[in-house]
Every structure is written in C-alpha cells, then in structure tokens.
Image 1: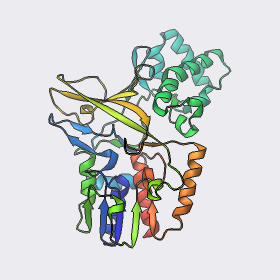
Image 2: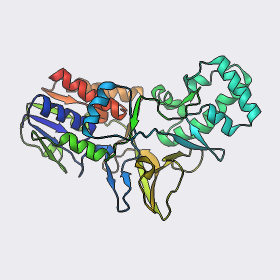
Image 3: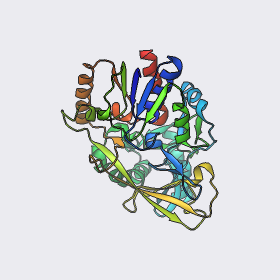
Image 4: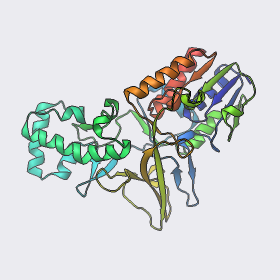
Length: 366
C-alpha cells in the first residue's frame, strides 16, 4: 500500500477515491468506528426507516465541482430543508423571515415591521442577529430584541454551553434574520438526500480495486510504512495531546420509537426556549419512508469528553485557534502527512466544504 487514509468519512473517502482512480495507487483506509461514513452514517432500521445515527444531514452546495463529483456515487432526491421552531407556542419557520413575522405577531404589527424592514434593508438579504440588534428605530429595536431572545439566546446557550457573548462571530453569523419570504433553511442551487443513504454513497466511493478498508482499527495499531498519510482524525490526538486538548461540543441523541405514522409534521423542529434538548429529528421525512411506526431523536448538546462521547463541533475561540495553529506548525515538520476534515483542520465544515477541501488537497499533491 502506498497511501494510508485515517478516517472513512467524507474527507477520507473522497481523497482515497481520487488517489485510487486518478493516480492508480493503492490506498488503505482505516477507521476506529465499526462502520464507514463517519458522522454521516445512516442505516435502515427494522421499520424500514433510514436513520441518521449522528443527527440530520442535508446535502447542499452551490459548488459545481463538488456536485459533479458526488453525484457519480448515487442519486439524490429534491428535498429542500425547512426548519420549524416553537416560538411562544407557535409553530413557525426559521431563520426568522417575513413568514415568521406574520406567524408570531398580529397582522397590523407585522405589516408595520415589514415596511420598516424593507425601508432599512435590501430584500433577500441575510442580516446576522448581532448586527440586526444595532437599530435606532423603536419598532425595529423591539423586533431585534424579540428575535435575539426567542430564537437565538436560549438555543445558543443550550447548544454551546456558554453565553452568546462568548460565542464567536462565525457562529452567530449562522443565525441570521432573513429579509425574504423564502423559508428554506438553505438557498443553495443543489440540495437533497442520497436516495440510498450516505453510507451507500461512501461505500460506492470506496468500492475500488485499489482501496482496502479496515474498520475497528486505530492509527496506533498500524505498523506498515506508507509513502503518504492523510489524517482526518483529531490533530491533537495525532500528537498525543502534548500541547493540550482542543475543545469540542458534542451531541447526545435520545432515540424514541412511536406507534404512529408521524410524530411531528417536519423533519426538524427546534425548541429554542423550551426543554433541555435543542431540537427533535424525525427521519422518515427525508426519503418519504413508509411505515406505521416512526422514530425520532431528541438532541442534547454537551461538552466533549475523551472516551465518553464524539467530537462534533470545534469551538471557535481565539485561544482554541491559537492552540490549533501550534499543532499545525508541528505538523509542518512531518514528511508527507496531511491533515484534513473537520477534526484534522479543527474547522466546522458542511459536507460540501469537506468534500471540496479533500478535492483541493488531492489536486495540490497530485
């Protein structure tokens, strides 16, 4: 074997496929888990429902290169993701948009606010919540404070375990007020769920005569020598945490099965101000699975603890970036070892960004 890829998620599978097919070189792909596809792993349960084990994954991209690459390995449906939130006991869509405005306020008040918003902002513009709070107008100030408390404050505190004041701007920018009637969660050109699931998609990527896959295998168990190593695991773990541990948020999913066709009318319902969980996923909505039963997952956020749970979200703070940069500097002293992926780059990647990063790294080394 010429190449070792550590991690069989999207980042690892993409670069393994490109090396095997384009360079015609042999690749060993290993993963500590007992399955491929990383946190995108899904499976059909006994009821015939496609379950996303590690939370809902919705593929979306504007990048033609990524879309043309990924669709080689499976067909997608035309699912466009919407998120419902319970605000003041009312079911409405988020990000907060003009439809939300009319759902939660009396019509005359909503119309007044809409007119003021359109005077102040461009239509179809996304305004980050913290920027939106900088209002002089009394009505818009009221609206900004309402959205901040009802949509952002409590949800962010639950999700990140800290006050929103301590959350990086890159995170808060993901919670905009959307000056539009478009209530989709993403506006990307390409959106959907793979018809046979993400696991099958990754399996098709890895199904090549030049690729060998070993599961339940730790990098430390590997004794062979390789020309190149592509490491998609945690960069601090690679260096045995010698400079300290990089912090992450983790997620705990509590699965429940019900003897009814549906539990909720949408795939994801957020609870910004109620309960300890952040949201409830109901998976059968994604591929329109038919079953008399349904499965939901309540999502609880928690801090990552080594050996106890999974790393999910790198925590974007200056001191964490500084620590990551020290590990990155150390990695430059290694010969032909490349770090990539959410854990290797200590970066929150959507799936398409992880795929693009792997493609671009391959193009660099090729």
